[in-house]
Image 1: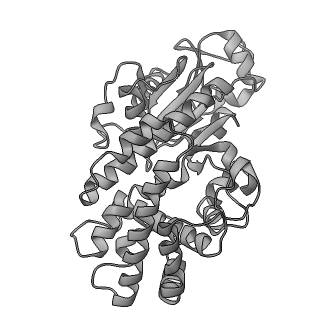
Image 2 (image 1 turned 45 degrees about the vertical axis):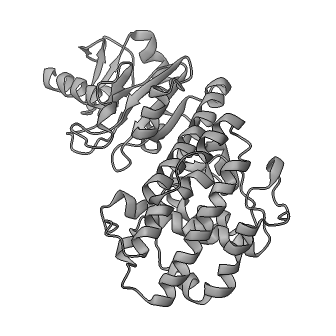
Length: 376
């Protein structure tokens, strides 16, 4: 079905392929010129997308210029579900890291496995993942580690299937163990200057302690980590009643990696001195405080990635709804960007994003599509 500004058009009234008149998909164009560009494949802001819980495809419209930033609930509609439908390769997404990882590193190998499905769907070569990266490796890994450590020590934390923390914890543990193995092998996970590989400079005391876990616990941890499948939840695999040797190894790894992450904050070349001082001056007492520091670090890095992407002319960026809220509330949204709340109606995640001025909700596109379908 074809509409021009909400008015349905039949064959003979406008020029378009026959299937666009005959199928049940709603397509609403601003004018005839936009329809003509779309038919030629010259648009990258329009498309029919699948939205869970809705009847038929939803006609999605984003800005035809500038950077479109999605705030997502990751079990709903994501940027990675949309880019192919609107016909663009110009995007960055938090599924991928912005850093160019050493191809001989265990972290790189782990990320290749973690992103296999998305890369295959979008035809992204593993060696070019960083070209599509929006997230920062160490902050993303660090955020769930303090609460994961508390969980392994016996704290009652929901980590089983369906838990966002359980999902993030399993992902982070896989990356953290790979990073520790890189330290042990003297491999620089993120080579300076974008080199393919580089020898690791002299390790700090904290890094040496982290590396020492490989010799001490490899026999118990490595087989366990191999069972942590992509998309799983840590609470389904381990808890405080698990094998004491495994628990001892995991807690030792996390304690040491958390300390290394604080060193990474102090050495982060992307942040300025004021930001690093602010982060390191925050309380380290308890897993909540540590997790909040790492979360702020991650948000700061998102801001430092989104801004240059807008300058480069990148068309889309996909981040979690909470990260979009941080950009808005802290004045970090690049000028000329357009914001979209991609969460479902009634979402309980990041409720403060609901109704934010200047943010277009996906629900509005769903409603508009339903109205046009009903009118037809």
